[in-house]
Amino acid sequence: MFDRGQGPPVIVVPGLQGRWEWAKPAMTELAQTCRAISYSLSGDIGSGRKLHPEHGFENYTRQLEEVLDRAGLKQAVICGVSFGGFVALRYAARYPGRVSALILASAPGPRWQPSAQQAGWISKPWWSAPAFVATSPLRVWPEVSAALPHVGSRLAFLARQSVRCLAAPMIPSLMAARVKCVADMDFDDDCRQITLPTLVLTGEEPLDRVVPVQSTRSYAELIPRADYRVLPHTGHMAILTRPSMFAGLVSEFAHAHHH
Image: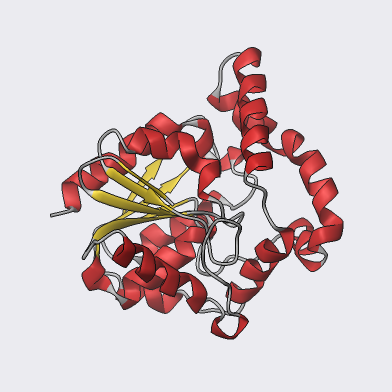
């Protein structure tokens, strides 16, 4: 669990890969102005929490409740990144008294469905893992190139991120199970229940190769009075490629709405 800094508490729910360590640069930046908290999702190495199949998606909302309690917080800003957006949204809809503000960053929209390629990976997660890893640099290169101006900085970024991924490895079967557990869920109703201050963040449309920007942007249309911001020169990985900008927007929103 990452828990550093002083100021408005912000809990960052990680994405599909489940490990907070992948977002350490942004968390370190955020800790300069906020109490920044993150954790690994249920079932992952280092999470300290078993995944109970009978609980389904509730594993993740219950875990978020435990994180708040463990941190000694009655209320916090909840920021869900990618898959973590589903968790943040459902928790905010059900327990609004514990959430001072909601941030959804590159989160799949309530009607999101995996692409054909993604569905293939999900159907055979372990068989697909070598190809998924091997082709990752090519998939993310356009976004990395837009975010980082020089070839040297791009290569250095890929090297650093590769080290993080090796140190905090993803578990393909867990990632597939997370997608499957939200496949038939209705998040439209959750959106209608949100009355909290909400910020929706995306990268630029051509650069997000994981979740279409329009899918994430639909939250700004479904949640009353939600703010929508675009992080320039990045796509799905703003928390990695533009950590200072990401942390700055999150911090600004947290300071404005946590009391």
